[in-house]
Image (cartoon, rainbow, N blue to C red; front, side, top):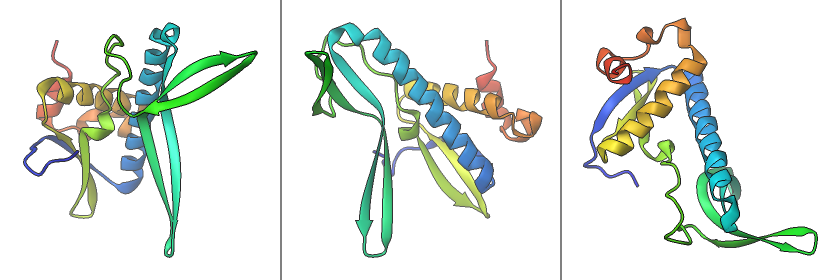
Length: 163
């Protein structure tokens, strides 16, 4: 999904431990949005699986893939049991509201002078704003050094705190 011509609109560089915590927190916030989304569509019989882990074994070891909000299921009752029927990775019905934007698809991580830098990609303004909202909430939850001004560049801090 990352295109080479997509520009980085905002950048935050952190050490590996803090970056890992930041990404985990963004993922948790996104899963919460998916749970809320599934609550709104529960009467339709459709379900967007919030989180899925797949592992692949290779000669050199194991590769773990994490998928967020990617797979759709149809839920049906068979007697007293709930049956999950996989229907694909595309929204199954046009009448359903759009699911929340996955912020993990709107960021890229790169190495810069020994630090990991999170880059918010500039696809569409609404998508970038959604990614920035997740980023702001995650930073507030983590309270990195107790002061976001130590982490956020002025341009991003001003954008996040505008009224």
